Image 1 (spheres, helix red, strand yellow):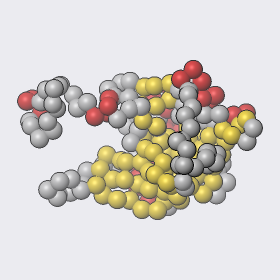
Image 2 (cartoon, one colour):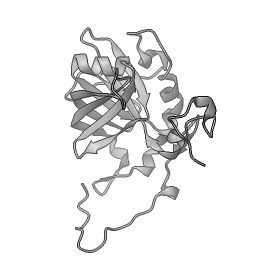
Image 3 (cartoon, helix red, strand yellow):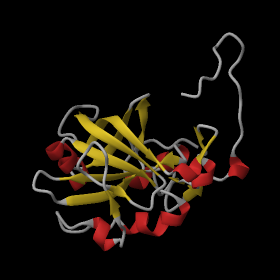
Image 4 (cartoon, rainbow, N blue to C red):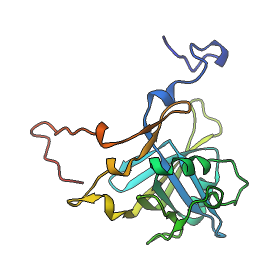
Length: 209
């Protein structure tokens, strides 16, 4: 089977684009941002990842509040979405009027950040405080107006609940992060799904970074 995106939708081999089901599971960037006027936004983004040792990025389809607020305030925070917080994370994706706080709508408490103005999700076990670096319009083949935008931030401070630190290392599985699949699917990370592999000799030893 070959799913050809150049064909009209009704002529393709599947009724839905399988890309999100194949590029999965994807980390969820639960982004909080504050406008210049102080309005709060909180929204989950599954097109999100670390792009360097101290940088993360999320992709916005259209100029949504998380992106515009991050640009205005030049800061944003990414809280870890977990199994216990799955309903709040989902509620925060509701299409609310601009400037309406998803924290209040999803009944989520805020906690102050250390180096940036936007707060983190108080119940989340980890959060990345970021300063906005740039927004890159993702211009499609053939040119034209960009419909998707890549927002890049530099991490300046990291919050971790000390309950999830063992021997100086963060126990990711113990936090039970959730990740996005295709369609309405999510994945749940646990210790049962964790495994380790060492790099081949000559490629350097694990440093813990």
